[in-house]
Image (tube, rainbow, N blue to C red):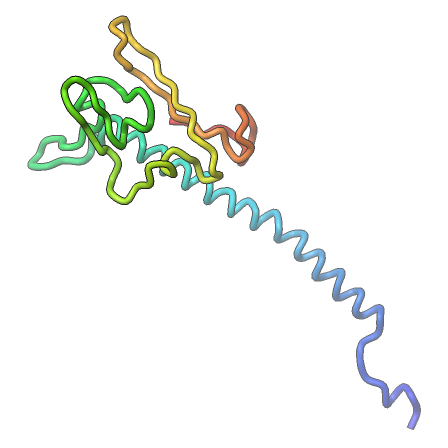
Length: 156
């Protein structure tokens, strides 16, 4: 028997070619997987912002016996909350109000976006110092104003 007929296995060139193909496929897949993962964080942040908005102003589509039944913080107190903590419990001269967020909500995590950064909350007041409009925002994955793609600001 000749030596070439007895030897079995892969040559170094074959192994290098297979490794190159695997590296190429991994290089293509990593950005795609990253975009999907970041897209889920954006969606989770948008849902949380909507949840906080509904705690502030209620849900107009929530009805009971043909009338609106969800008015949130604004429905009880006639203005927007002074800060996000007021959605858990708010006390003034008329008593204690809240919670406006559903049960099981962590008092700290509801104020954070999917990246773990605090939401930015700002409001404007009318001539009588009533808080009449507000913005709640996530600064995105980079926690800096502006940005594009996953680093873009998300606000409601």
